[in-house]
Image 1 (spheres, rainbow, N blue to C red):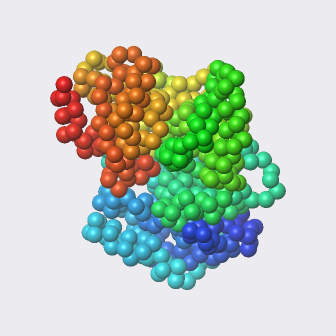
Image 2 (cartoon, rainbow, N blue to C red):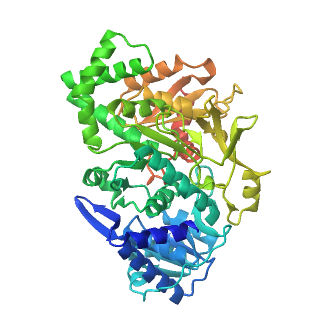
Length: 544
C-alpha cells in the first residue's frame, strides 16, 4: 500500500475528527477528516474536467491552508505530479521553475498570485484559482494506482549557488520516509492517550515541511497551521503546541530576542538570567563552582520557567532542520527546559537522513542515520549517502544528476564528521569553502556560529575572504562596534592565524528573503550577499 493510500485510509477512518486547523490570530478554522476528503474530491473533479492526466505536472502556488492540503491530496489521488511554489518568492524566480517543468495547470490561491505569475511567465498554460477549483463537481473514484518509481512531487531546491533544480521524488522515496518519521515521533512523544498538539509554520513547498504534513496525516494526528507568518507569535500562543518544526534562524531569533528584552530590562532579573545561563553551561561542561550552581539553581526556579512559558506553556520539545543549529543555541533551549532534536537532510534525500534520538541528542550534532541508510565520508570529508530515500534525479538536468549521483552514492556537498556512537555533525558546505591568498581551506560556518555565540543581539554573520588577503565578516543586527570587536577578539583567540577575522562590516538591518539575500528557507545566499556588498567590502580591504 502506498503512502497516498495510507493517508486516504487514515482520513476515512478519522471521519468527523479534526484533521487540519488553520490558526488566524486568536481564531481557529478546523477541517474534519471527512471535510478534507470532500475538498480533495472537488479538486479531483476539476483536474478531470481540465484534462489533467497521470504523470502531468500541476503547480500549486499558495500559502499554507486547508485548501492547499486538499489540492495536494487531490493531485496525488489523480496521479499528477505536484510542483509546490513558495507564495512569497519573487515571481520572476518562480517563472524559471515553471518554464523548466512546464506544468499543464497552475493552481493559485488568489487572483493577485495568479496575476503575478502570469506577468512573470507570459507563455503560461492554464491558471485556475482556488474558488473555481473547489466549485467543480466532486469526483468519487478509486485512487490512481502509481508504480513505486513514479514521481509524486517535483520540489525545486532553494538555489543558494545557482539556478534552482527540480528534485524528482518518487512514491517509493516517500513510502520509505513516512514510517520512519512516524516511528521517530512516537519514540519521542510516547503514548499520551490524546492527539499531539502540532503547530506548523514552514511553507509546505519545502521537503521537510511536506514530510511533516504527510506524517501527521498518516498518523491521523491533527496539524495546526500558521495563516500569517507576520503574526507568528500570536498564532503560536493560540496553538499552544507540544512541538513544531523549525529552521535554525527562528530559534536563533528567539534566543536573541529573550536576551535583548532582558538586557533592556536590566537589574536583578537580567543578572540572574545571565549568570544562570553561564552557570548551567559550566555545569554541563563539568567546570562549575559553587557560584555557578547557585545562580543556575536560582535562575532555574525564578527565570527559566517564565521564559519557557512565554515561548510555549505546553511546549515539550522542538525539531530543527534545514541547516545545522549551533551548539550554543541548542544548549540554551535545553537549559530553559525545551529539548531540541535536530534532523539533517536535503530535498534530494526526501528531507531526512539523520535524526536525534531521545536521551542521545548531543548539541551541535544532527543525530544518527535512519534505519536502512548507508552513510560514509569521502577522502575530502564529504558526506555520501545510499538508500531508499535518494531522489530519482533532477528534472531536465542529466549532467547535474550524474554529478550528484555517482556509483549508487549521493554526494551531498556537505562536509561532515561522525563520532564513535554514529552521531553526525555537519561542518559546512564543500562549495562554501573559502580559500584566501594564504591558500588555506576554511569552512565559514563554524567561525560564523562562534561569532554569533559571542555576540548576543546579532542577526547574522557572513564570513568573507575567498581570494582575499585575509578574512573579514559581515555582521547584521542592532549591536554596537565595541561588542562586535569583543566577539571577534574572542573568536580569534580560539583559532589559528589564518582563520582570524581581521576586519568587519556592520549592517544594522538583517538580511531578508525579500531583499534576495536569503533563500526561501532563510539560508545565506553567499555569492549574492558578497556581490551586494562588494563596494563596501572593497573599501574595507583597501583601508589601512
